[in-house]
Length: 212
Length: 212
DNA sequence: CACTACTTACCGATCGTTCAGTAAAACTAT
DNA sequence: ATAGTTTTACTGAACGATCGGTAAGTAGTG
Image (cartoon, rainbow over all chains, first blue to last red; front, top):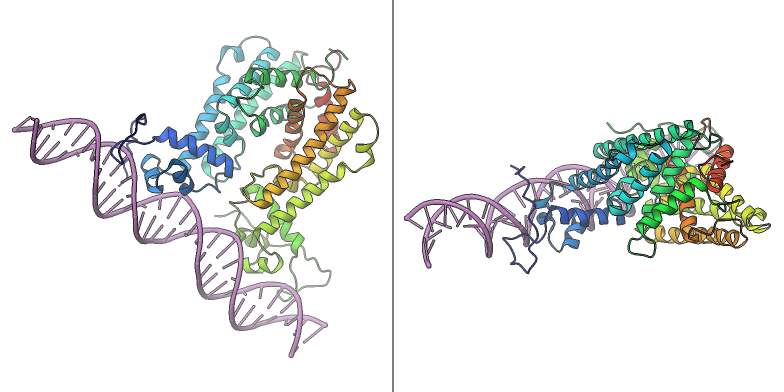
């Protein structure tokens, strides 16, 4: 029989602990390691043995904290999606002119993307092989759709250009923003706030000089 | 329960072929099937058995035409990289003002991307697990670097805005263009030429109305 | 006959996962 | 305080499945 009782989130003991009896790591710790590894090698190419190795323990020890490989994926995707979906519930995304709300959501997306970089990276690289992945892709599409509606409203207000298809604009916009996970390295000269400013600026005003 | 295999494949030899003894497919045919499958499931998650199934034959039969799984990857990446690198050798990429050359290269990139969609898609999703992948990533970085230099020159000419870091601009630009492989479906209402126009237009002029 | 294009059968390696056993910490009763 | 019990966190070995790849044999063709 399998214990469905998930062990309480016990903080890993800070000091040196004995060989056994007390946790050297917990589920969140495993998750952090797993997400990084999934991004490094891809989900399928990452073995549970590698995760155990990176945690400095055995494969079966990992299974004491985690119910399986897919469960790690599910938890990671939940965190990424929760962060993104949370943006749309904030006042800045609900009140005010459509263009302002669009700017707010895009800025928020960049923020979440940077804050939970490895988690969102994992989400953006899904292929939809399993039911879990397809479910996450569905939620991601729903988020994209909400932003697409903001684009439509801003266009209807006359804030945005109408000579390019609305769907194309939205997809290119997301392509630009989502690509951040492929190259942004936190801790560098480019701060998250500055990055968000740059993204908004380039997206709305383009590459040309501001005063053409 | 698996996905439907495509039983009938085009015979490369013009002569009539029997049930056996004559070629039912050749290396390019296997490559086409393989690249699509690699994109569907990811390279690691795609088994040689699945490729055989989609070709309507056995695993060993595939190995008669192909030296191995990695070889398929290598050939596919060669095609994608060759197409992209070819753009930079054309006159439009060498002669004229920097901004015009940048526009030419970006338009060409969109064209190659659409023409060899599955091949470029595969390239853009690499993780660098093996030596072959790392080699391809290196060549892709070299291409990106050449385009980045065009951006720098256009900035120096005063054609492009200088208030956003040059590297950031280049990466966001590629993010936008490369994202096309994730959503563009050939044969739809949006033609490759129109797509290229839209990309160039959005990239240079932004989301705002042309006459702000 | 030789050659091409396969076939069936199989190999060793690796995968995710499970299981029985165990040492130490935590809890309980005395 | 101490003995006994339970719980926690693990170890090491093994499981069945699947992987990429191979060996050997063979039907059809020139």
